[in-house]
Length: 95
Image 1 (cartoon, rainbow, N blue to C red):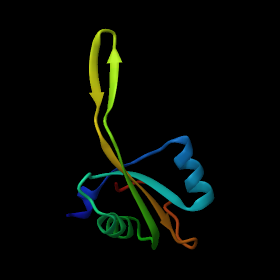
Image 2 (cartoon, rainbow, N blue to C red; image 1 turned 135 degrees about the vertical axis):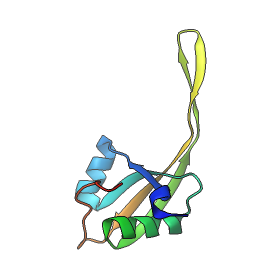
Image 3 (tube, one colour; image 1 turned 90 degrees about the vertical axis):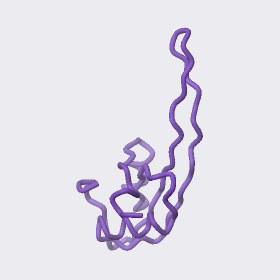
Image 4 (cartoon, rainbow, N blue to C red; image 1 turned 180 degrees about the vertical axis):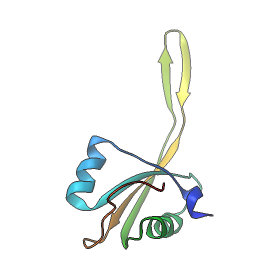
């Protein structure tokens, strides 16, 4: 799998921002078919950092209702990547 197909976008939430500032963590929405090895390689090549740990999780689709219409939010896969202390992912440009 090509590295630009692995990482879809960064996930910017309050929890991910705290993780980035205090624990050297970066959170990404990734391709559902990507493995931890694919994610590690993509982050190392795109951001030029040393990856220490990768945690990947699948989030199931959720049922949502608006008025009388019932629909679904799509399922997704996200990854939390810990990088070495001496490196930093200063911006998410290039993703």
